[in-house]
Structures are given as C-alpha cells and as structure tokens.
Length: 64
Image 1 (cartoon, rainbow, N blue to C red):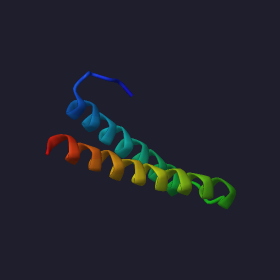
Image 2 (cartoon, rainbow, N blue to C red; image 1 turned 120 degrees about the vertical axis):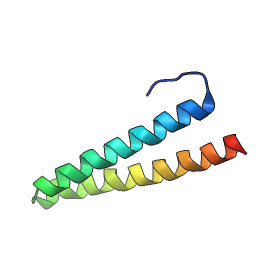
Image 3 (cartoon, one colour; image 1 turned 135 degrees about the vertical axis):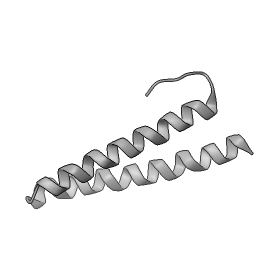
C-alpha cells in the first residue's frame, strides 16, 4: 500500500490492491484440493471482498 496524499487516488489504489489479492486467491483455489489449505484461503478471499466493499464506501463518501 502506498500513500499519495490524495484520498481519491489512495482509495482507488486500495481497491485495485484488493482486486489483485482476490484474483491471487482465486488462482490458488483453482490449483489446490486440500481442504486444510482451501479453507483459510477462502476466508482470506472473503475478507478481500469485505475490504473492497468498505474502500468503495469510503470512496463514495470522499467524492460526495
């Protein structure tokens, strides 16, 4: 995460980082069958979705 000092720019970068992480987790889940590995990855993926939603809400508030 990098801070540019502009809230809109920073939030957009945060949104992009969350999407990249989610894609990484999706790729891992496609390759792994072991439930002991899949379960924590699924949890982390869900957290990325929540983070993305929260950053999106923050961006809407910042631009209103």
